[in-house]
Image 1 (cartoon, rainbow, N blue to C red):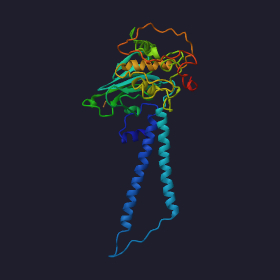
Image 2: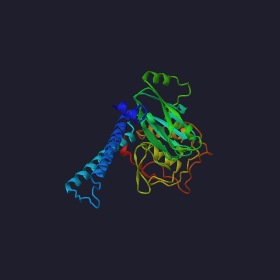
Image 3: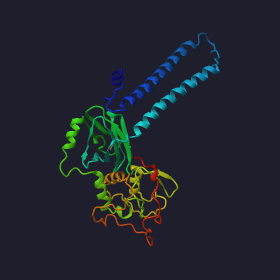
Image 4: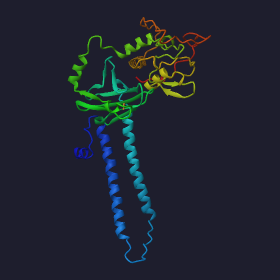
Length: 363
Ligand code: CUA
């Protein structure tokens, strides 16, 4: 039945954990609307014949519908639409919430290619390699124009607008190679912005992980610490819980942050990246808007590494004796922040502000 409907609607094979559910909703919506359309068409034909003029000058009878039948009709249709919405909303929620154990992969879209950066420091162009049966979390952004990451077999599509970060996830259920397409017109070679997802079974995936060249593998979080030191981030941000010119990174990732505007936000990938690119947009309460923008300064993999590092210190206990890597900051690329006439009073209660939202940390 499923295969027949899929063939009838010309759908590609379903190869992700949520594809079957989406197809079911698709069949349900298409089925009920087709039935409804057939019913209305049949009714129109019936009335056309039944109410035709038989004698010249004959008038149709006045028909009054009972309140009960009208209420039944309205109630029935309303229930149908609410069921559509409920099923759709629960599926949307599932698709928008990556499982906590999902493997992160950073995706950069640019004219006209897809670049993938893995947590072990490797990266690849246009081919995304993932294991079968494990959730994969994609953290995506675009370097130039709006693209859309589309894997028809996974029933997954996510627009990527430059300057913003997006999260999407999938779990591939069958080994094989599946097309990646760009589903947003992005320039002359839009139609050639193709890629593929290579889904490997457990053994092949282990073998793939082992094929890494010496020196190629580097822990993304470790690289993040190196980037933070080299780009001068650690001059203003501590990683031991002490607020400096900027908020500490310890316990920041995933926490709830109170902003100077009075709003609160969750310090997720999107917020952290926006804070690097537009630092004055969402200044944390108690801090000054003195951070320069890093748009065009940080390379894409560096942003990924920094975020990965911040995530790695989300549960860090406050220990002032952290040894930092000895790397000289690139003063030309990222000048140390200057607060004219003002330096923070130093660590402790006299500092600019307490680190926000540590109570919301997840394990
Ligand atoms: Cu990228 Cu179309």
